[in-house]
Length: 146
Length: 146
DNA sequence: ATAAAACCTCACGTTAACTTGAGGTAAAGC
DNA sequence: GCTTTACCTCAAGTTAACGTGAGGTTTTAT
Image 1 (cartoon, rainbow over the protein chains, first blue to last red):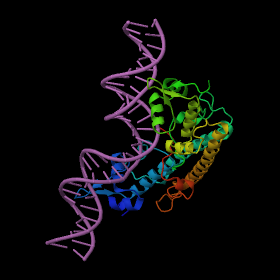
Image 2 (cartoon, rainbow over the protein chains, first blue to last red; image 1 turned 90 degrees about the horizontal axis):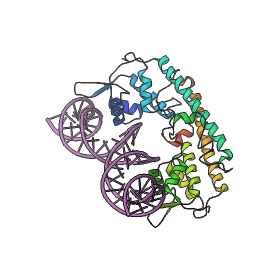
Image 3 (cartoon, chains in turn green, purple, yellow, red; image 1 turned 180 degrees about the vertical axis):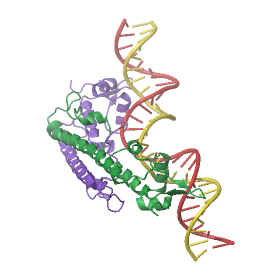
Image 4 (cartoon, rainbow over the protein chains, first blue to last red; image 1 turned 45 degrees about the horizontal axis):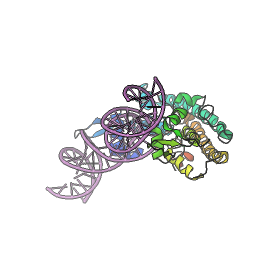
């Protein structure tokens, strides 16, 4: 009963993502389905959780690729349980911690940095940060969408 | 002397960005230049500061579009001074504050959220955050690049 | 004076995470 | 039984922020 076969439309409605997104996720190996007689996708109920985890992770800024990697470390056949998800939670939480730390340092540097005239390519602590952000590469971190 | 004409190659070397990036920024209206006899770009020295500010802002996760908007509010003809840059600094710092606040709430929600089994589309505080992140839209915030 | 380095424009390529559309099949409602 | 939804595949389009390469000109160095 719990593994009832859900249609793609139902899953889309329940999770708030588009059908095309589900196709896309499947193609990327993030979710799985089987087909019914008429070649239509059917899902196990745990796909809902899976998708919500994907969405949660995306909110944390984790890429689909990275999510996929993480999922690979999870039980492939067995439906993942609380403990499995909790591990992901912990991992991503640590990443958040680092992110917060970096941004805080950045904010504190910013205080007076541009204003004080130090903003040159050579020695500005913002342009040349010495903390975690460096390791993360020059990736964008969206703050606003004006 | 201070407004000496700098070549695109020099500016590229000094700022660490590629020549094509400077072309791109100019096309986007982020920087300006004039041409010499042979149709080659020349820059005022303050383009260096401008580019470092762009790069700093990008580290903060601000999009070029948003940077452009912000630049529009700056003195167009007069070379911007410390005070002008300091205003930008303040503005972006406030955005950082909000970002940090959001991430902190997110991290705290995450603590136990997935593990406790509440992660459903309807009531998970991560999937349905009630704070600033909501306003920011469903934008990615890159954490890692595995 | 000539070769090498720097510069120019313009068009197309790149990545992520999707969305849209065309052309056709299956399932559901009445 | 017929029509409307729902679903299928596959190709191509979208956005941001550039990078790449071709084909040609200008500057600089020797």
